[in-house]
Image 1 (tube, rainbow, N blue to C red):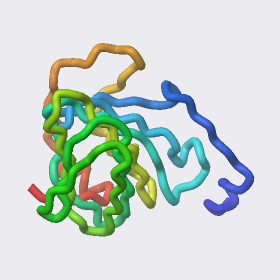
Image 2 (cartoon, one colour):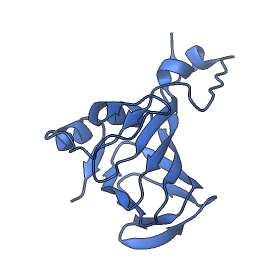
Image 3 (cartoon, helix red, strand yellow):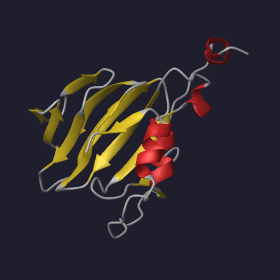
Image 4 (cartoon, rainbow, N blue to C red):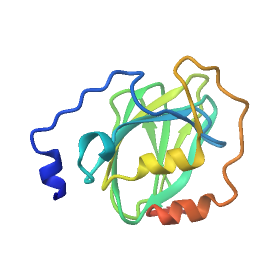
Length: 164
């Protein structure tokens, strides 16, 4: 069955604690919550979720050569670096990141920064699972932990390009 047929007349509603959640390694710390993913929606064309970036942490600079990404600041504040230019992030800030656009999210505040992300085609959820550790709602954050030693290979296998 083709992808559009699998998604035809299909609706998915998820509550805040529904679905997978993964603690993320340094330097982001925090956690990722993939929500609307192909295994739930039947549609491989995109996925959506949230990423919570711990205080004084960051998502390191990277780009996507096979995906476009939308990011919306949902809670907290910080800045997004896009091709070396700094832009403030606050609730409601929206970013479109096309193919090969270098970007980095910086939380330089004392509070968590929560970003909603949509990526097309899907796949970011697989990255979070590959580098993270399973998280349960309400669970205390673990001590910061290192990224997998093969994180660059994981990224490249998923269409991401580490730029540093």
